Length: 164
Image 1 (tube, rainbow, N blue to C red):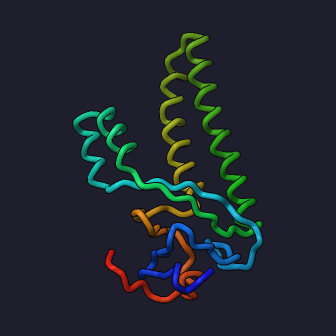
Image 2 (image 1 turned 60 degrees about the vertical axis):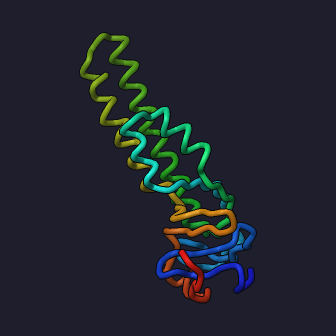
Image 3 (image 1 turned 45 degrees about the vertical axis):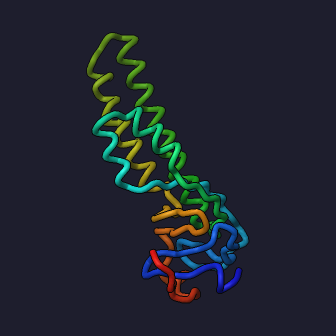
């Protein structure tokens, strides 16, 4: 990695799309040879207002204007194990929600169908909160801004001097 391709901007990591991140866990800053490939997409948050008009219009516009980047982040064995555990729990909750819905439909009991809805919401929230490794704060043609990086990890890099 080079100091001319990775910077920090307060609590955000700024990197070129081609930059190679160091062999340290982005969550705890310990040395690691493990990597996790993340395909990131980002669009300006104001686009979410289109949902008020139409989800279909929002989806089409978001697909057209989104910016993408693929980054390989260091992830230590402990954080990889925790991620696998959270993934298993998310799948378990999702299957429980689906099972409750199917059971309710088969035995014709709306109680199980209604119980599946909060389970589905819980599954979604749990998955979003626990499975996110890093999140794009912004992506443009050349640079990626990443949130969710350990503060000690960020300290290795020089302060970002560019325009945001």
